[in-house]
Image 1 (cartoon, rainbow, N blue to C red):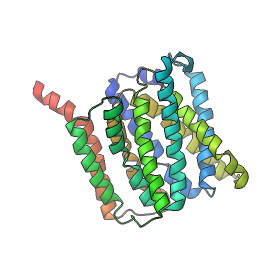
Image 2: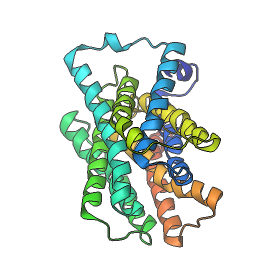
Image 3: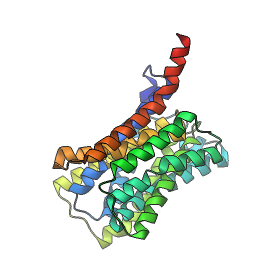
Length: 301
């Protein structure tokens, strides 16, 4: 994936933000396809991760990278790789289970506490102190999330809500452990996460064997290749070039776009507060990404 981006004349930080934004767009299609696919959610998670793992292995063979799996720098790189992999596997697994136990609005809202956890963990683990613009963006994003889900937030099962919070903590931790590999090859962590998720889901294929049709197979293939396969490569590229908190703020585009895909395909119209909340979140992401370059440009004038 790096080889493809290196041909472009885009500064590393800008390319990193673009990559994470594209990753969030890919992630955002999950809601639509999960709604359309009549399979057990853990089977969906395992199936798409199995396809994503095959896709990522194929990309690695077609576009070999300078830093391969066996060339990692010592135990710390190896530990960060597996920590990120297991964290993201935990994100995918807890997310689908939480959706079965509580309202989906609760799950998305609580999972996207991730920027806060990424902010705190990055500060503690890798000494990436958040800038003032990140604190402002975090406050705006939190307010936007509350507006976005105000009409859909319901009282859910306590276990499901707890799992959604765990998913958010793991999502934030994953970005930090991925960031710790900025001199290595973070895509290996994403490959590990998909292998772990597929293995976890394997028994569910026996307990709840899915019905394979052309539409269901196509949907799972799309989710595996595009929704999490391409997304994993894009996130791996982007996290090497922007800090963990900025990555999580940019990824907050996902829950804004998710219902828009459903609107386009199924006619579900977001409430006015959801539209306002989405605009606030998008503003927070754009603000945190552009304010410093704008200030630097103004000083030079």
